[in-house]
Length: 153
Image (cartoon, rainbow, N blue to C red; front, side):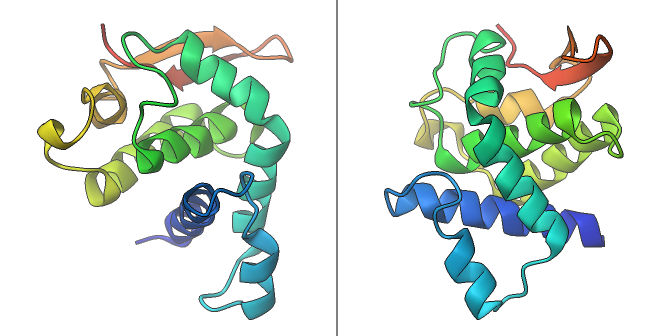
């Protein structure tokens, strides 16, 4: 596992943990930085804080490109995995869109529920499991074009 992959996974852990505890996104970040066990890298902090800062826009993009499911019904791991991927695709210039999608696919394979019967529809996992079939092109705030994971219909 590459360094950035570990940092993404740690960001996902913090986002998921915060939701699980009923806290705002990133609500456990300060405590995790204080204990630093496991270590919290600056890139992890950048991802968590980026998702926190841009949550409304990120969630809006995910909802806009989703068909047949909502963020509320999505498993927490999938929801936060998509948030990190969309953050990197739209807001992190040094990560190419296809790279962010590829990382999301790898993390989904490792962390997402493998049995579709255990969740309401498997669209979130399919959205990152087959990037060539589930990527939409969208315009970014700076006029560029980026890829966005989107669920199939």
